[in-house]
Length: 537
Ligand SMILES: Cc1cc2nc3c(=O)[nH]c(=O)nc-3n(C[C@H](O)[C@H](O)[C@H](O)COP(=O)(O)OP(=O)(O)OC[C@H]3O[C@@H](n4cnc5c(N)ncnc54)[C@H](O)[C@@H]3O)c2cc1C
Image (cartoon, rainbow, N blue to C red; front, side, top):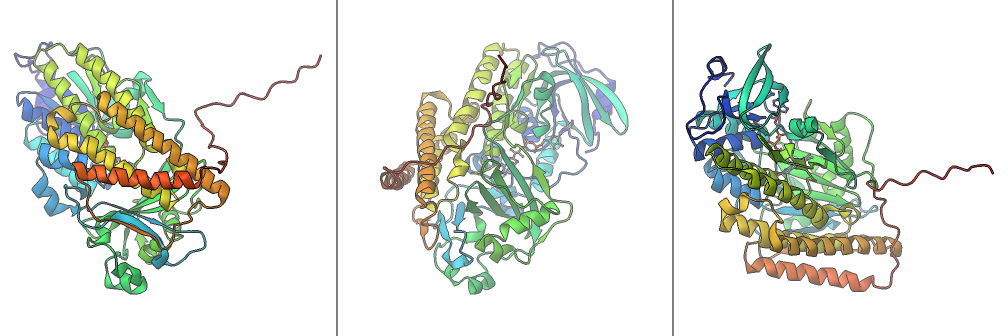
């Protein structure tokens, strides 16, 4: 993989294919970053237009086990139906069966008593718990096998975006600096966001100040083992599906933790928190801090008390959400995390990567086939930020306020997942090509759903503040089990879950009707005016 075919390509200027209107360049498309988004983009381009000269430049020598391990149904559909990886994923990764949430109260230390929300049966549509170091390598190897040129490890050092066919890229490989020309630059460099930062269009989402830290653990006690069931006999009852195959979530006010089983027996675990409400342990190595946090919750303690964090694997990321005010222009396009990231709750990061990557490949194909893409670029620049903002208000804005209340999250769980199945999941299974070519929450239908979701998200947040005022926040966090008898499906069954969620919401709405809420969280995006300066008369 290291530099194969590359030297020949940079030494000999290859003429563009006849269908390409750009002048001679070394490559038709140079992709910055060869992980999930970069490799998928390379594959999609080569499969749709084999003569395209694609170069993937990947910085790392070896992929690490990054986050982005739990797929949701939209990413599952992309991996299985679009990229054709069903067999590979079934053999090499872990089948995921839904999302499970655990709640407790500050006084409780018994795992038997923790309230639980989750599915009763296995999932109906394919989703996976991924080892990203394996998946990303597999995708990059496939991209190379299917005709992309890959150079690795190589770092993009600088670039000039001069318009389609006139881009100049400087990279470092094997200690040497080389200059290339490219028809298009596709930035898939993840949170490095090389193009957005250089163009000054990268923005932090100030109003959502969430952070994350995580590590992989060995020696974790799985919830389905004899030992776990002996220590917490209530685990013998409940769902038919193995609990550990879900992405288990420990929930608290201002934070949530994920617990993801990996195919080698390790578990990935981390905590994400809103700095306005919660502060996790801050002393010692990050792995130990994550463990300290997990074991402060009874289910976490049961699973992680003897667990060992993997050395040199822990990471901490501050201020997760960011976006780019433009995602494409003449001769350049962003895909995956290079365009933006929101929040890992509900595991929709790879969904967005799938959409943005697929949409990018459609625009590039048009251009490479000699069509004018001005309108397509304008349209993509309009729908991406719109989708991002709708997604934010619908699912995440101030949500951390009510994450620790089982009743409120029961309502949100049902409505958030039902709307996901009625909207994005149904759409990608109905027409993958059309749906992945655009962004979620797009069009009039998407706008209506996003508005409805933003409305109930706001209401649940207000009810959380009312419950805090009344001292009833988390009042059903013990000894309640909400198991979904019917799995989520992209059909009318999802509507039934939605109606169920609305009933739970209305119940808590009525119950707190006459309570005055505590004050809302400050919005860090709204800068408070400096105190007035006293001027002596
Ligand atoms: C805490 C957390 C938890 C998450 N959990 C989930 C989850 O459960 N499910 C989910 O779907 N998503 C999740 N995500 C999101 C998911 O991790 C990302 O959306 C996904 O990994 C992005 O993939 P990508 O290929 O776009 O970028 P990346 O995977 O970041 O890849 C970017 C690549 O670019 C390369 N690169 C960078 N700079 C250069 C350079 N100068 N030159 C050459 N190459 C370069 C890097 O080496 C890297 O390989 C999570 C994110 C966070 C922060």
